[in-house]
Amino acid sequence: MLKLNASYSKKVPAGEEYSSQSYHASVEVELPDGLSGEALQARIHETFDLVRNSVEAELHGKSPANYGRKWSEKPSKNGPQGNRSGGRQNDAPASPKQLSYLLDLARQRGITPQQIAARFQVPDIQHLTRQQCSDQIDEWRAA
Image 1 (tube, rainbow, N blue to C red):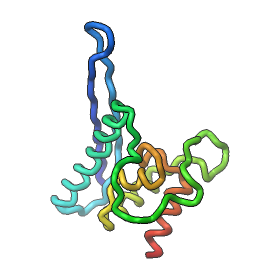
Image 2: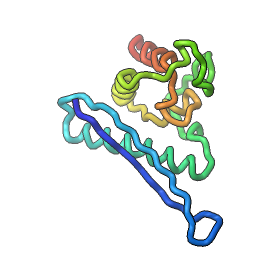
Image 3: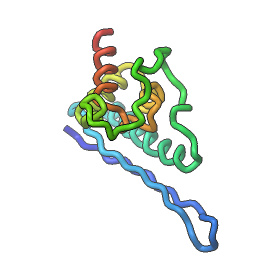
Image 4: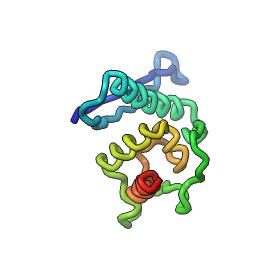
């Protein structure tokens, strides 16, 4: 198993002279063994795009939910899961293994992480709940 770390930082001038604000995001994902050079490059590009778009969206106060979608399904009937502090198991964050598998299935379908996040109206896929991730995996495996 390969590990990929992608990060993006940006400094912008702040209101006062000689001051700035810094924005940074990073993500670590596991990649399956045996990827071709082209597939590996595509995974690196997608992961970096996710991190860069997240920082830019945060910087400009825009929601990544505005990103385009490649499929026509509507968000899950449970709606967005903005409050992740609930005690129920379904509100728990998706596990790294779940997210990795979800990304593998998405890649096979030509769907980007940004499109998944937009579908569930979360800033990025790291904000998916276990239930949301499980529902999407089940839907794609049944297709």
